[in-house]
Length: 361
Image (cartoon, rainbow, N blue to C red; front, side, top):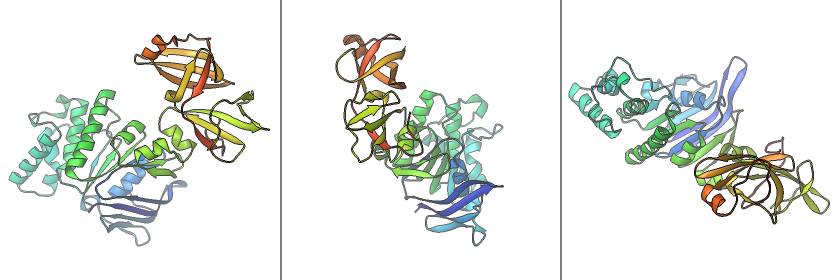
């Protein structure tokens, strides 16, 4: 069993508090992703779980066994926590070939030579590097080096796998390929995965559950990828899960108006009580036409991106992004140029109460 329970955790460096009264539970066998901006404390939490750092307050338990208790001053060394870790920068030994890199944890554990070679060869094959055992890291691509790091983390058969933004240094195609491979391995092995990243596509693509963390180290929402994407708890979560547009909508008398210019709002109304909201929507939720109903807009930028046309549209002094399929634009006379007038309607809107200025334009 490899569930992770973090309770009342605190960590600070000098007078800077990184985490405070932090609680989190990861279920056994799940792929759990902690998603948040750079500097929010994600990697610090990972290092605390791994045992590379000690908490100033709180406890950490793995598989029901307490591995850190700040009040008692007790901590279990990293090599006794039954975990594997993959870093962002690969951290493979440049003077060792693939097989020796992967074997290294078993060598430290004094595993017999025959068993060590057999398990290392199995881990190498598992990550798709069979036949490359004798190559040095300098003879491998970035993606292959990351596979070496992954095999090295898995060779000890850990109950918990910690991944610290391991795909950041790869190009877009390799990132996509590796994220599917990590998920496939997790399903095959049944290992608990704790993944930290600021990349929402990776988080949504591989996770059973996602926790969204803000810049202050506070958890804003935990749920399945579908839940947090379709039902974001607040404007921060909505904006962090992909490109987001916001329009300030205020009730004036019996009418709803948009932005500082007070343009009449058209479309669905807020689904909760209040007089000022931030209307959040994705570029793909924007429907653009040359005339008819909708909010009046002016195209400020038109960009052809292959499959999509990307438009920057000014509505009542606020600029929003719109993404339309290029084929539809060609078929329906929606190839706008900069300066063209248009009409905008929205297929889906998330209403957020105005608080602390979040999401308000």
